[in-house]
Length: 205
Image (cartoon, rainbow, N blue to C red; front, side, top):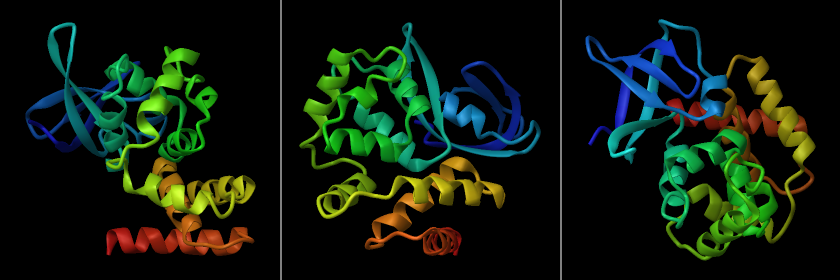
């Protein structure tokens, strides 16, 4: 099984990319969020991958963040959620948004994704809210959510600040979410940005 691809971004399609790994090119299905965060053609690209069956043919689904592939696997365990629907959810929502929707039983948030009606959204929440093998960030979020609500304006502003500094939006969202979970109210923008930058330093140390 192909778990990860490292290569060069060769082509971009409506719902996929072509990644050249040094003589062998793979066509990989990706979310719209991933497409919006890609760099220019002929630049390095790393994708976490999962092989799925689609129309009786194997396809690779790719993700910029390891946590996204974790959520993809979790979501596709729910009856009625295939690869297409899982990618649609990841196109519409961040991993933190998905976790928040499940923990707080906000099925309407999941229903925003293409192909996810109210019944399917409710089923996702019902089947996943009590699972113990959910991504670690969601388990941390469940603990913190019970004590205080994250201040969304500061979080959004921090993400924008990191993007303006040149960081990938998905990476920025992940770093800011992790940093915010370690803070106690009030959450200030300056402190949140500093702690988020430390998350990047720890990641690449």
